[in-house]
Length: 228
Image 1 (cartoon, rainbow, N blue to C red):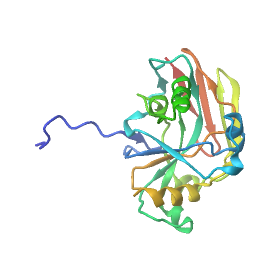
Image 2: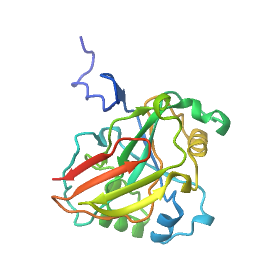
Image 3: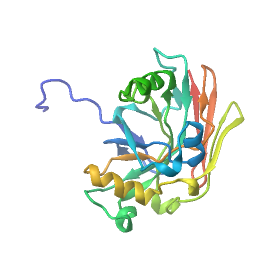
Image 4: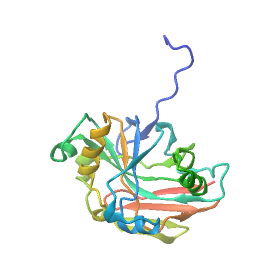
């Protein structure tokens, strides 16, 4: 019997490849401008910035393979990213110990209402209205690291209707996965169920209803999302 004064919200979760069990999602941390070419295309110097993160909400995750075009925007952009899923955490984790906290990997999209994000940037306000909206984090199934090994190199790409838009390599990350985990744990108590969206290569751009995005990371099955 529930002891809550309102119905308990559903637990956000992701499928796990080869398992009927699901991965419960706690928090989503997104690193900004973690590929040099993307930092440059967004007007920043990648050599002068420490890492920075913003968050999406756990219930922004969607594994349906469909992305509903959101309201209050005319400029929604795709950003393909490798997802790092944590099975444990803590505070002040060292880089040397960071990878022992990784459950597995997946492919995701940091969908962005770019026009709204741009307005917030101009006013010096937070980005949530551009980043943390409903179903703004399409994600494919997670694959345990025991099956993939730790992914630190290999192609990452995205096509729209079969046309390549983004292409890079995981080894081009400015801040590698162990550094991201260690850095986050200095500021937050990271924990099991947390997801890290590890950055996107250059080539981000707009989508429209009817577009089909195919996302790839070497070592993982392709993730296909239709804009509806």
